[in-house]
Image 1 (cartoon, rainbow, N blue to C red):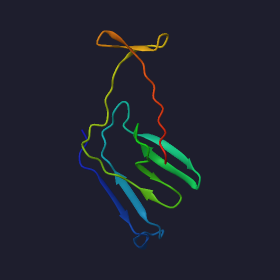
Image 2: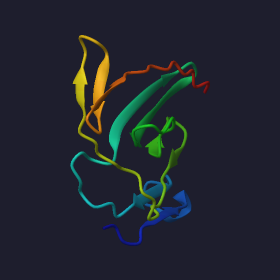
Image 3: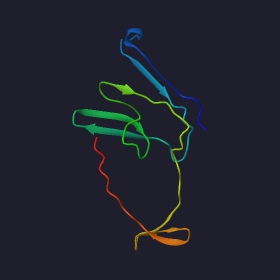
Image 4: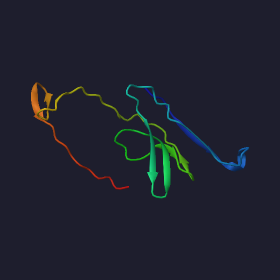
Amino acid sequence: ESALSNAWAISGRYTRSGKPLLAGDPHVAATQPGAFYAAHLKLANGSASGYTMPGVPAVLFGRTEYAAWSTTTSFAENMDIYSLEIYLHNETYLHDGQAKKLKSYKSIIEV
């Protein structure tokens, strides 16, 4: 179980390098599968790198050439694991002892 988390920033006026410093620590417990995965997005005007969660169309902790950001955690339910018997030959899966037809959906996420 995760506990409280923190994020903080220091102005470049107070650092030796003169550049700002950002630190984020979400205090997320280690899980299998892991809650986050590394992502690198190539954009029309640059790129963004950092970490996100499956199903989230954004980099939650990350940076670009010009900015950086972090988040803190809450106690949201963000992971469920299911074990399914899938039969690709007839595009079905087993649910409560009955074969159900697999469905597919196409979604476009505009960014």
